Length: 461
Image (cartoon, rainbow, N blue to C red):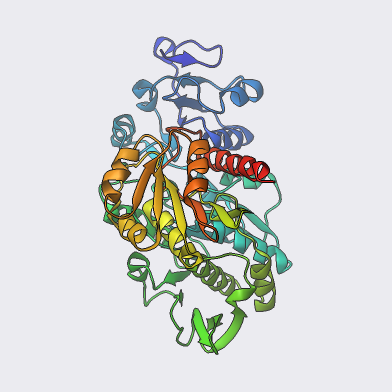
């Protein structure tokens, strides 16, 4: 049933029209409400959900803002000049396409941000690693004595960054959903870290997904390019300044990895920068992230000593191949943010050298192709424990790769993993799936896993 969250009659009865419509009342939509209210603009909020996440906040702080719930009201959208769409709502929704055909401009919060930002924007996207890279770079900028505003798809919604004085740089993590509705982005430097199959329930195929990701390079700023990723490597533009990186030995003007007397080091051309042993983060995927950050930092003239000091101190982000504990000689890792095949493969490969590896995976498959995950599991994983709605989908894809078990909960999976893993081995939660069948989000899934591991640890004291 359609709901109204303010004391306003149904628009279809009053004939009232709104020039601007905010679609979606989640974290992003609420930031748009704050932004437009601060500008004194008139607008309406709609959401297909009857109880969107930020409804109470809207009622408490913006009671005069009209809000219509329960569907994407075509009558409201048909009169709009501007539609500000939340990332979770696809541009292909029939009500949205109809409004666009009727002349409405459909944009997102990042477009609004780009139009007003008074400091240079650094744009970061990728299927995997973008939160890590954005956080690393933010810390590097601060270490260099400059001010940084970090937001977008990580932490603070971009428009909320305007609540404080402009920094020296805005560091924006951008998802493909956000990039869909951006038209004015012209960052000082941008990177597309990688493209692996994800969100195939929203995109026709990986190529169409990659095309959206490539929008991060709009404008004329410096392009940072990962030569190890075929989609990223294909964007090189001779008319634009670019900085490249690879896990291979670097040529002149390129970041990479060199081996000297058996020790691997981060390098820029022939210049040796830092032994990999000095880093707290683990795995080749994180080395690739570190190289990307160095390239981004170079593009904005950050001093190399400060960048390297910051890299040495960076311990990684929660839920991203995060080491939790060692219990009876077994290491436990939380990679709940591994919501797609590429992320989980990277986590598995990063821990492959640790020996006996047990993987906990499963959730909502998002129409993903798990064939590449199967190859990685066959090579590096001794047993897989599957959880969640689409466990049977993964079981079929992983058949014949290793021993496969199932569990009804995270707690059950942790206890089963403890029985299966050998001393000196590792247990990795890296689901390769979304979490919303069992949890509110990947953070809640990771916290549940962490709590289960903590309980296991207490039981062994």
